[in-house]
Image (tube, rainbow, N blue to C red):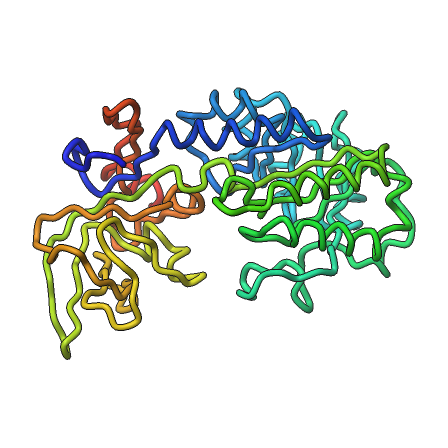
Length: 371
């Protein structure tokens, strides 16, 4: 665990380097044992200070915009591009860097196929299998705008060499097995004609308790049935699952109707929006999430709902204490905003007991976003 006294300024996103390396070793070993490739998805984590480490393990990166492609291309050998819809003024630059380009619809394919350079072309399909309870995060919900339905793709269009499916979210090995079974059921008419199948993200292979034996069996069994298909995964979270924190300081404690709120120097709305969108309350070192806990955690923005909780602390919190909010690497830094003009947290790395700030933010970043 990090020593918060070494964090020079809060709030701060702190990556624990040794934990990152531990996750990378798991993914590296799986690729050695199995006929599967792991891509690194920038949409979940884009801390380019550790891209060299990620690129040493991942076979490539997946980018959903020009900015992500530009950020990834100096580090990763393969760039797999996918966007629900491509921006007209960005596509040709993306195509100049991409080794693979996946389209969300046949109409997007027809619009851009002749401008895709030498990239391998793919189409996103609906896996016809939902695993996610939160509708906002379910690509297979009724009426979804993401992916083609089987009835709308009876034949593989000319020039398309692969299919892409994404329906998982922090899921287990059984959900992967069910996904492949559903794809074989609903998309079997195309599997004999493709070279690669990208199963997107949500494969949380580095989470404690993940059934790696079932994962390995599922991958091997699929390969036996379809040895001509290159299987690709592109998790956004597995690379950095439980590898870092958001460290915050208690600036005030307020009470209303018997509810005490620890007022932090960070904001859930601006710095941890997934906590409000999912929603979920992060684990906090030295505290326990309980239905009737003594304290809420309050953000620093003016949004009335900028809080999570409630928690019971092993030691009574005081103004000036620092809190360690756990597992704050994935889908945090990439989603931060400067709502209310609140400065973005520092970004730092904790390595061998020492803390180094990688980046700080100030008024310049806020001003450049506006006019």
